Every structure is written in structure tokens, then in C-alpha cells.
Length: 334
Image (cartoon, helix red, strand yellow):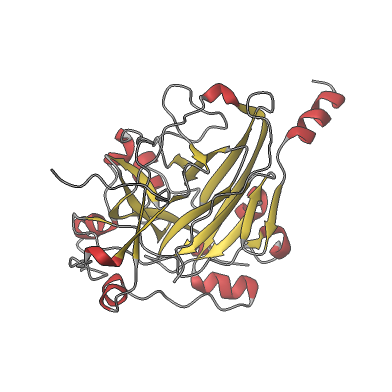
């Protein structure tokens, strides 16, 4: 491959930019990492919890003399999380849409397969934004996900550890792929956004395990895999630092610990659902169906319960539906 070819390919790769706490992959996609309630792991399917504010993001290169060597090699950004804290990913996109791969410890959060830098044409391993406005966890199928919850590496709790047998990567990996301009040409359009607001030691590195289950579809690609241009892609590694490491690296205090789901609900604050009728849902991923929740792992290891997993009652009027078209008529039960 000649120098001109390599230069041309580099020019076609999507730039990654950090603007405040939004990570931009190219010009058409922004990703925010939202602090949230950790829902009970009690066998119920919960509605969508709120955003309690975005996690702060920092560039690895700005703290190169303080972060672990593996972080320097992988580059990207990092954010703070407490052990057993939950998060969700918020996607800000308009037209043309963007295909986005999401992995946890290089295990694909949609398909459960090993990380690759291509889109799977037979077993969809990506989401399409803005049709997919957010992702709260790993694909457990039948209109549900298992919540993203932070755990240290080396204990066997993470999705990475359970699927691959190793815990050497951690964090999240994202790759956005733009559409081929000749297939989905640009036009002026409003982006889709929904408001749901209301040197470090090796132990600093964290991954994501599986928490409680909530109602959330992962939509099939309505455009087809051949619409996406692999030459117009950009990838980024998102490291997770525990609260102590965040202080040591940045000199900043991490955000306060979130309230419990029970306290939040008892105060009458809103939960959410998304009107996405007719968009479909991807089937469950076999590898991810076998992932045990953090509560189940605690039981296997003989640990006492680390959180209150008693059921939280959420009255129907407390669940706010988002995205319903104006004038849409509910079907009801007949």
C-alpha cells in the first residue's frame, strides 16, 4: 500500500472529538454517558430510569503522565464510576443516520461476539442512530436489556470475564460508521433527542457487568448493511476509572453517588418508556443470555447482598412515554 493510499484512508476516517462531556464520532453522532439509578435485580422488567446527569469525560492524552500504561497505548477518553454504579448511553443523531457498534471489554453488547471493526451482515452487531436513541445494557432479547453496571477487573463479574474467560480489556469500545453518501445523501434535518433528566494502580481499571433487566428494544437496521461505508468510520476506547483513581489522576471529585431506585420512586419522580411501535427488536444473543448478573455472581461467591434488590413498585402514571407521534391513538386491551 503506497503512502498516498494510506493518507487517503486516514483522511476518510471519522474524527473523534470531545466537546464538554459529549463524545463526537464524525459530524453526525454524539454520545453521552449518563449517570442513573441501578434498578433492582429481582426478575422484573423495569421501565427506563432517568438521567441523573452526564458522567464527566477527560482525554487520556491530557493526563498521560498519570494514567496506566495500557490507557496511554489505547488512547481515547475516561470517566469515573463507583463500583456497582449503573450507566446508560445516550445517542444524539440526525440525518444521515450512523451505524454504531458498542462493546464492553471488546465483547459486542448487541451480538455477544468478539469485537471486530466490520459490520456483521448476517447477525446484526450494531445499532442505528437516531432510530436507537439510547442503550442501557447488553442485549438480553425479547424487548429487554440487562443494565450496564461497573465492576473491577479480576473478579470475574464483568461481561468480558464471563464471555471470554479473561478480564484484560475493560471499559467500552465504540465505532461509528457513516452512510455511503450516494445511498443516504445529506439533507437538513433536526437531530433526535429525548430528555430524561430530572499514575494510577491497576485496580483503577473497571469493566461492565450485568445488572437488573429493563424494557428496551434494540432495533433492526432498516437500511441494510451495504448502506454503511467502512472507510468512513471512527473508533474510540472509553476507559472507566474507579472513584479513587479519578481523584488521583484528575485532582477532581467524582460525581456524588446516585440515590437508590426505591428512594427515587417513593418521591414520585418519573420513569420512562419509548413509543417505538413497529420498529422491531433484534433477537437475543446466546452468549449474552448466559451472562450471570452481579447479584447471581455474588451468590456464587458466597457474598452477602450488596444492594437492596427488593421489588420497587412504580405506578403506571409515574411512567412517562416519550416519542409518541402527535395524534397517535392507543390500541388498548380488547
